[in-house]
Length: 216
Ligand code: DX5
Ligand code: ZN
Image (cartoon, rainbow, N blue to C red; front, top):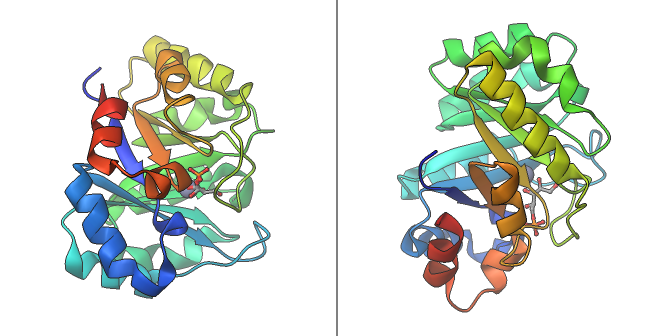
């Protein structure tokens, strides 16, 4: 596997100054930017929609990693694709026809991702593995930044990495929730390729140092 991808989440940014948060992400050396879309139904929080993705697209070349925590995500692929997302990751728990939806996302030219919450086993992903570019393992219950990583979820990263090897596939594995300097090495050991990092990124006084440290 190559270098670890670091994907800072703007959920933890100062929302009165999104432009400078995006500049800080770009300046840190991270090549991805994670955008958490929440609908107040799939998760008990509300954030933003395609209009913010469009605004962020205008000011950065970063890979826009859009994480949909919404019910019926299939209703919104075109809006997010048109807004400039590079990947769309939706929740297994929020969509019955996952294979169909993954293919539709790929059909728009975007990378297709599927996410699972801590209580969902990785085995449910077995049949859709050939259709994904990215699998996101939530390491907290989704909805809020700043939570503590649930260590048991890292076993799922390990299991999924084994499933990928057995199936001879090359999708990326991402972890999201409670990632910091302490938990990142464990996540990497478990086999992740992508580290989503929200509060610890924005709290850090040395963002490029942090990104460098996480990338190794
Ligand atoms: C949580 C979101 C995460 C969040 C991570 O539901 O999906 O992407 O921004 O934030 P931290 O890194 O603070 O746990
Ligand atoms: Zn997320």
